[in-house]
Length: 121
Image (cartoon, rainbow, N blue to C red; front, side, top):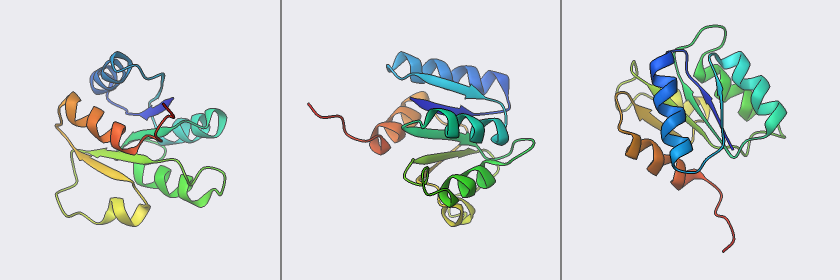
């Protein structure tokens, strides 16, 4: 299961559709605070979050996940149109990976696949 946090409806639609087509169960939220509630409730395999959102940014969401002993193992992918390559804010917040917008669905899926726990064969 993947929790997605994105405040732009069109981008959220593309994220959800791409992940569901790849066989993932997806829970969508539109801000970091909702995402944190969903992460606590559902304990997803991975979180994909926009950086710039209302109520709680993706950076703050990532920090909150890393600060919780029961959640800190969950990989967090931060997606951003405002960060430049080499921006250290995502790494400092504890992000597992960063996707710079615009990105292709294939890039998203490759990133998610690389971070998902391997399922036994």
